[in-house]
Amino acid sequence: MNHRPASAARLAASILATALLSSAACAQSYAEKPLLAVGEFGFVDTSGEPGDQRQQHEARLAAFGAALRSDLANQYRVIRFACESRPCNEDAAAVLTQARISGARYLLVGAVHKMSTLVGWAKAQIIDLRDDKVAFERLLSFRGDDDEAWRRAEQFLVDQMESSDFSSRSQPAR
Image 1 (tube, helix red, strand yellow):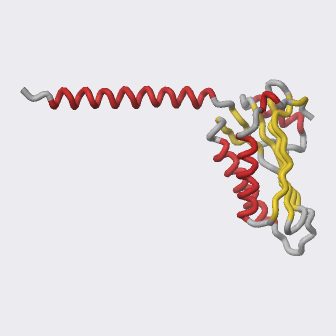
Image 2: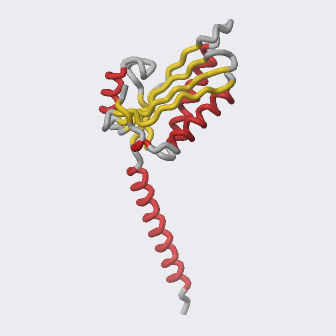
Image 3: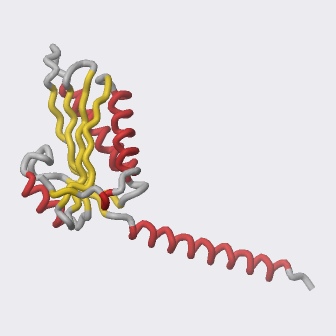
């Protein structure tokens, strides 16, 4: 009498059950992540450099935003948030209303400022939409105006956000 078919069937059933339980746990884990709306960051260039660099900066800003959304997806359910006003920080009341309508718990907004060829700034705020408070705020300086400098600034910002405890730092929204 050969028991191999029964053993194979039990093994297949065990693998299937494990996969289903794991999938359900992942879905529950994903649903428990806070919903973060990521607004489009603004950009200003006061460097006074000759030559039109708008295309390069628009491309870097788009890559910065895409990388933020992708990298933050490890800790949040991220949605892209398109503000009616561009950038997202121009009309705060309207932006907050739009973000609440989206169902997000948090809203990430910010801007990049190119001060010179060597110095850039990135400011980011996360607003707790339920409590109407600033849950996270950073002003970063970074060196350089190339793809690598922007990528490092984005990664540092993500690292700062992921290690932050929003609930203990909330301040009234400005």
